[in-house]
Image 1 (cartoon, rainbow, N blue to C red):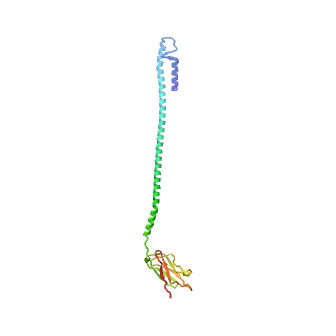
Image 2: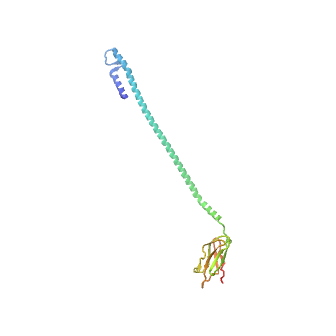
Image 3: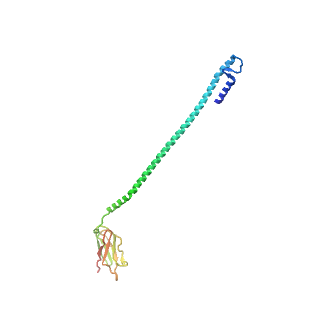
Length: 224
């Protein structure tokens, strides 16, 4: 039986059976002894029932208040955790944005410095290359056979881009004439120049090479 049902029954009993401790069914005054005894014993029982109903009601109210308080505490706790999570996410986003900005600035500085660095590297490479002097490469022309010629590098450096110019001599009367040869010091290159009716072997050859400046004129040895 619920608290409200108990309280209703007690109120009904008071209304129809007892008024100021005396049973209303008796019209006589003063009431008889049994009636007074009955009324006196009924009031403590009624008071205890009311107090029992009140305690149950207060317990129900306390449980309801506690439930609401726990629910509010859970909501505030979840809201606080969500705020903390949002704050952590925001800090991570800010940190990533700062790193991206720093990377972009570093790349921009590198791009700005790149032309100067390339130019400096090229200048360093040029400065590191050995300076070739024309005097460091010298030539000697031999004619071991009538149509065979040997060009020898008698200098102290390697000659690159070596070309032998035979003038207006027909190309069909030449074989393996150097056009872009590499002749190391002390080594030689061999080629052929044939003479024919109306196109004799030239009297001189012009030899040029990389860094040599003006071509060297080498007299063609005679052949008896």
